[in-house]
Length: 460
Image 1 (cartoon, rainbow, N blue to C red):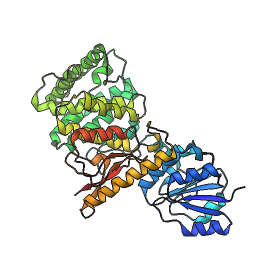
Image 2: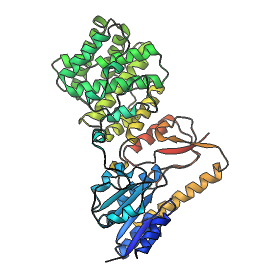
Image 3: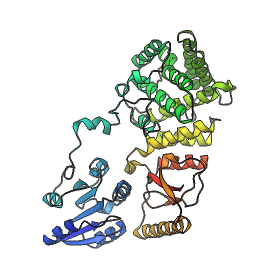
Image 4: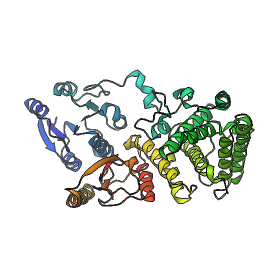
């Protein structure tokens, strides 16, 4: 049996104690920097095991997850994967690698040796996923979302994870309104008609509220948007149409759009007569008109709010039509926003793009549909191009103050201080690129199908 251990340290400093213990046990430890070096050695001689050290940070964990997912020649080699929170991030590898030991950093070297050569579920270095965390892994929220306290989220977390009606606290979601109980009863009627529609109404209202807040809307704007979104599907629930999960994007029939639009018009009458809320009623009427024809003339004072409500309604339907969040749904929404503009308010467009981007980047990067098989030589060539792009960035901005931002926090006018790079090493945008709205949307659209680094440096 081979005594070779391949230790892929990447950007991390090698764990000297682990290497020493392995060598004391008479293993031949080969410390490597790049995945291509690992693949070359494996092609010549099968090692006893592979240790992948991604303990330098979450960015390297994502890179290594992608590398290991793509490296099919390594699937039958015992793998020890070390890094911060890798126990919860390595589920995709469990489906591919015959023997896998995910180890959360920091760790005890002896704990790894105790399990060497044994097929195990994630445990050492951390603990197995707690029972209470399982619903989170399935796309459910543990903390009830509060529109008044977005914290560090733009609203994308709720869009991506608010799967169940029970994930929401209606007391937090309902606007302060003179007919608050009537809104609650309408929401209950929607939920009774169809559970999917009930969860959809709550997600859409939360996201519409977040977009309104992020575009500088007033508390009155937020209350009207929330009321309109929460009851928008009341007419559909009351009518004869049973295509509750109908997708509003793409080449949908005029008949489908007409029936949905008629349902929204019923809701507008309900909002005016029962809720005594003419502003919410005007927003819903405008949504119905814009759905039938984006060029419709709607009152200027409600145009922005109506676009916000319609876009969040269409986006949630596209992302949740299969009753779980679909990353390709977000891709379709971003593509539609760019290719067939429904919106005239660029602030709403920008805010909704960022919400979708946040939802996309919360997904496991190894599950993106993009994939391209490359030879080792092609990988080496791509790495050289990346190193050249980074050298160019250092030349331009080495002495300039920079800061890191999440990909979904890119906004028009920002200048990249480093290249924007996919996890496979492909340079997407060079340093010194100035972001505009369409470019921001294209990047987030690409992130839905191609694993990307979640953060990038910009010039201060």
